[in-house]
Length: 220
Image 1 (cartoon, rainbow, N blue to C red):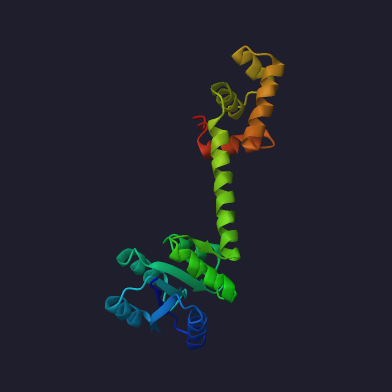
Image 2 (cartoon, rainbow, N blue to C red):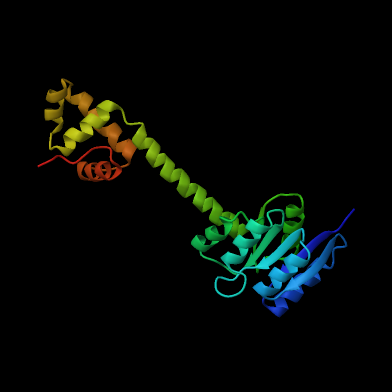
């Protein structure tokens, strides 16, 4: 069974040596090079293409987003493991947008790091707990936005008509007369509209509906 070739890209000597020490414990892993900056990394990749690059990400300085983008673009078959200090969710998502294969914080332990290497060898993704939390937050927020859009899209034509009349200043009694409906029926429609759009009163309803394009402002 052939060994997995690994290239380490890290600007900090102590951390670089620590990564090497962990990897050297495994007989199925082979360190083919070490890069302290972008120039060394570029030369190493031109000399021999590894199976895995372990890259210590820095927001400013060596090994930033540009380096990640270049590796994923020029060497799509390389598995890229990112190590990093704690990042904001926004910056974290910037890194993940490049479809890196694994992402761990520097605080992760040896077993978690080796599990990441094992995962990418099998073409699997691996993210530590903090990264998974950020991803979960994004998914939840995406679901909330989609639910809001879904609620807007499930309004019936009658409900949209009633929202427009409310925005035009009609009372519930006026709307009932205008649409030949009972007062009770219009009241039921209002409650359903408020529930679907998650608003509490007519003012919030009008502002929300105008902002989302559900209705149009009445011309003067």
